[in-house]
Length: 286
Length: 304
Image (cartoon, one colour):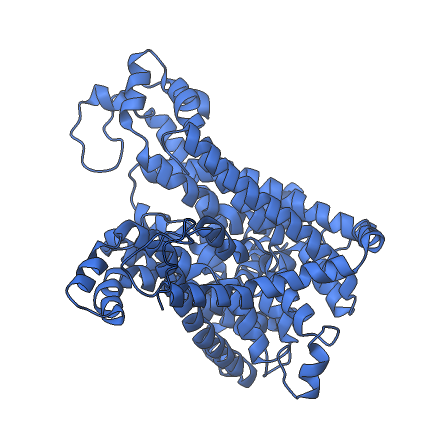
């Protein structure tokens, strides 16, 4: 199946003695087109079929706008919290020794492995007024379950590994000599960390933040149990898509999905450009 | 807590990573004070306990709240049993499909240089940045009764939505990048010299793949399949949209958890959830074992 064009000036691919390029690329492209590109372009096609004025009207519907605001707002807040604690956690895992470290390190991936619905009902049970955590915080006047705060809690769970797993490998690669140089030049430990180490970790941190944020915006399973799902208050955009679908209101579902998709792709582009930028600017790269 | 970091004079051993019999003064210059280390460690561990360990513990506690007999009885329910069977069926179809795709994509991308390779890699990652609900929605729009091919499918008696094919499609979409993403960096790192040697010694293309490439990538492949399978069995949002929630027919385990939970049948809901959590724990243990044992044979990049 090697069908290299003779000696054309423009080459689609560099010559190679390995066989199977046509076959493997063929499988890849057909699978990609069938499973991903046709369905996604179907959505885009449907959205464009709505017409501009309808599309704008559907997106500017107050309930939709509120749902989008809640989704992006809670995801942003959760990603900020994850960035702070994720960096601390990664630092502790890379630099310190303590009993059970390997178990904790492995547990960081739990949100990747645990089905979101399971996480959702577990968190709801914990934060419900009679739950382990709910019992403690309820007398303090804090309500988490069935409020927007509950959404943030679920999104912290879901997003944490993105920050830790993005920052951790970069921290491992930090050259001790950089810190020693800073110390010999008279920097305090605090200065070394804040002026030397953290700026170098920033691209990785931003990437992890963006990944956690993007995941949080689209998250559904873990959120719907704990959120309470009150329209205008704690109803997230993915849930509103499901509600519109159940009402057979395909136009509204498509419009919300198209807006979310456009923003996710913008995020993807943002992540890629951070990485390209940091590759140029820093020694250690996300 | 950051202002505590200035006190760096405490002579204490250990920046981590390997046994370091370094001089105490040197270690002090590149590590934090004992107090700062303690504070950071406790903060990190408390965060992990609060957000990761407690939910996991809650699942098993709630499942066993009324004793093991009730737990077993909940799992013996016919609808739950059919949900377990459906989840296994869907994963058994979706995972091998993405396995073949992943290997093919990694072969094309890692072993050859061609135009548009970076763009292709980005496209493969695309499903990760799409909300699960939207992943389900695209198939509803494609095959639903309002779509172009929906009526045709209906008149020919082909059921895709609210049936196993729809569940498989949504699952394949959601787990699409897992295997490819694991293999591409690994195979790029390994290069092609082994394969070139095999070919020059007269091996055929397939022989080269089976006897040279596959042994080289088997642990990375297993790692990717493991993650792919965990997601395939646990997927909720995408599957929820295409399933139609027909009890005993199109409910996978995560959907069954939702139904039982919404019926206030908490013991049963958490019993099914405990099975899924057990699957997650097994996945994590195998994954960690693979990372420790075969770290060299699994790609260096650890991001999902």
